[in-house]
Length: 79
View (cartoon, one colour):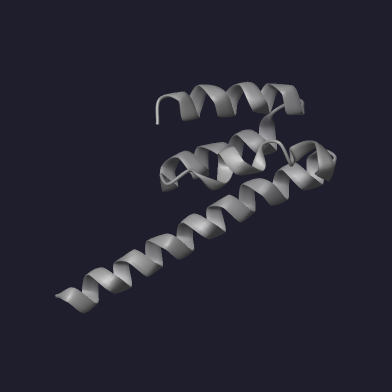
């Protein structure tokens, strides 16, 4: 039972880290890498995997970095 919770913890932690990397990768590809440095700390604190999935989609669809910043702010204020 204890081992199972440890495995779940590390699996979720790995998925979370991967989700953060996906969001940051898309932002770096679409927008100038140095421009996202200010967003990185806020994105790295997100624990919710669903929220990271939504942010990944938003990073792909936002017309510009300012729009993504607004989306990030609105999503993380309720966290």
